[in-house]
Length: 277
View 1 (cartoon, one colour):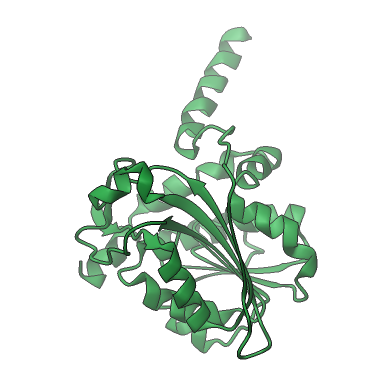
View 2: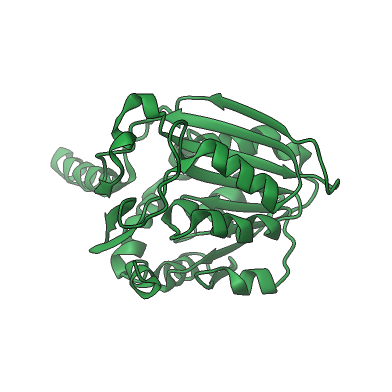
């Protein structure tokens, strides 16, 4: 896959429309949806130990995390980056007091800005990179305290980094969909930054065969141990730390209907309310 083709996939206006579905959520529903996910739960459970207050999101889409943080964690100062111009334009339109910017595909401009935030948040970003390990090595040093990720992982079998074999049909384009071997991911993370503590929380699911994914056959098998995986990384001030690595699983209970269904439900509610009147 050529990089230009990958860029085009995220510049489609439908990208902003799809990811803006949660803008229709009330704050209460938004919180309920977000805090079901393990990366949000890890953040909430550990935020009291974060010293700094500068929070950077890579892959901010249309800015709904900004809305969530402003209301429930206002002590953090937020800045969001995304490669999708339509998504950033939508975020600025909705939240003019927020700080949103288009960034380079390889994060070169974010790295050059030398922001040194306390928290870097990258949810469902690494999996769409042609070389996820190279991307991790560039992403992780941006934060000076904590990095929070949502990855796709497998317990057995090596990472298949061929984007022709690990991909997803997205907005009329094929984009990478990389399922990382969890041990390989840990090794890359520990090479990229000195790690004091790493919490890995897996939500085991079958990744193969869903949502227009084209993945290696092993990703269909339960014994492969594929998962939607939250990773909470605390950097060490010691350049040669003895990293504490905690690995567990916690099921994410999707009690809120899927984001793509929210618009349909909202329209049905409006129609029903008119009928009842």
